[in-house]
Length: 126
Figure 1 (cartoon, helix red, strand yellow):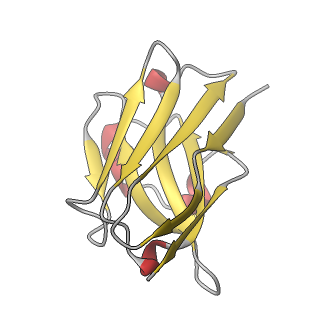
Figure 2 (cartoon, rainbow, N blue to C red):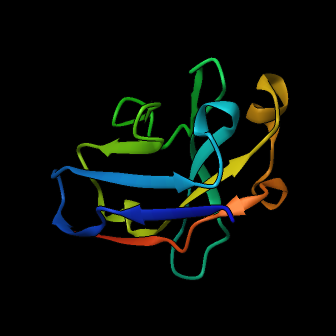
Figure 3 (cartoon, rainbow, N blue to C red):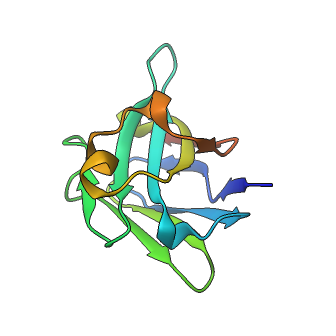
């Protein structure tokens, strides 16, 4: 049984930092396209950052230079380091995994991801 469990969310003032974690079980994360997504109030779910099997990464324009996605292959855990947080980063953040290979990984839409976590809330106040 595949499980993705997110943690690390919370409330933060603008300019602060948080690190989200996603512990994977039932899969070996290095063999998967792994991503962070978020859904703000009244908004559609959007891709934040993706890391493929080669550890290549892709970021949404809105988070480039502020967020960093990484993976600990020994712990089978995905991370999202979020710096210089803004109120518009407020959302429910989800971890997702899909067996797609590199080019397909970066073009994959959120609806195509196979496995999802339950999400962790991030709230940023001004």
